[in-house]
Image 1 (cartoon, rainbow, N blue to C red):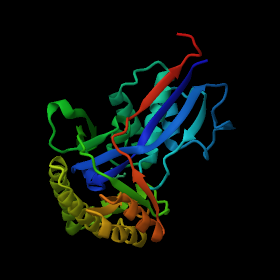
Image 2: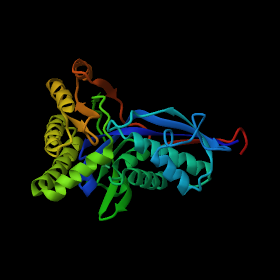
Image 3: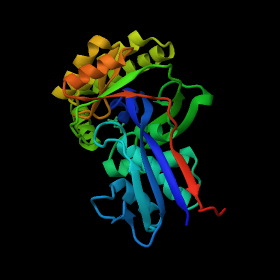
Image 4: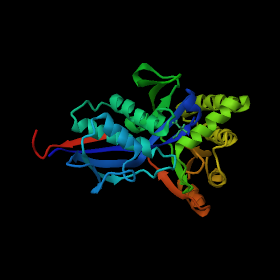
Amino acid sequence: MTTVTASAPGKFVVLGEHAVVYGKPAIALAMDMRFTMRASFGKEFKVNGAPANNYNLSPHMRYLSEKHGNDPLSIFIEERVPSGSGLGSSAALSAAYSAAVRALKKLPTDPESIAREAYEAEFLAQGRGSPMDTSASVNGGGIGLNIPYSNEDFLWRIEKNTHAWDISKVKVPKMTFVIGNTGIRAPTGPLVEKVRKYKDSNTFAASIVEEIGEVTLEGMDAMKRDDRVRLGSLMTADHKLLSILGVSCPQLNKLVECSLPYSYGAKLTGSGGGGCMIALTDHPEKVARAIKLHGGTPYIVNTDVEGVKVHVDNNGKK
Ligand code: MEV
């Protein structure tokens, strides 16, 4: 029997969330929390030994499974990225699941095919959004969307409705980030919709989206120069812009504020409304302690991680 093990990392956004949905630039880094699963063909659809149903089969899995002919699979989920916390859990799941089904069906498992398919799953499940999370999870390392890039760094271009994203690799100097999780679950779809409504009905909100794009491009330059002071101050500025768009919350603001005395800068990461913040710092232990003292769960992140991985075990047979 063929068993496939597939895994893909979560991510955090350094700059540009929400504005990226409208084709503005963004920078995201994959990190060392992974979604890992084992899959094989089975007699009936099962997740962790239980028959698949609406509780254990996410819309992403349902879309990918239907797309590939609904063959019954037996899936064991071995690791997860915390969900609803802005860390790209559904993108990691979609990337790993797409890789696993494709490998079982002997279809190409090149990163671009997986990135496109995982984005379709994510878009359908959420009804909106950019290919940032799925591309970061598939490629690993650091990625930029609609930032200037050289030919050798270009990964793929994804288009959806009226928007297009050129996705490229970003070289990230050695920098330390600390994540603070508020523990408040906040699914992405409704927050993206909230910003869309605000932006479409208010020219001031639309100008904030433009400004986030400008801050992100400046942040990219600062990152290239390894200028942490500038990058940090742009992250904090981005947090303020995101707050104006209505996607921060008191707990996120508290964790950002308590990190700032020990950081170059801090901001919410992902869709906001709860979930996580990040701080760029040379004092990760101090930031982690402050986050804990203020009710959050800290995590000192390793970046520069591999993207989607897939391993096929044919039980010794070729
Ligand atoms: C979520 O991690 C990031 C958002 O920009 C949504 C998206 O890009 O799909 C809020």
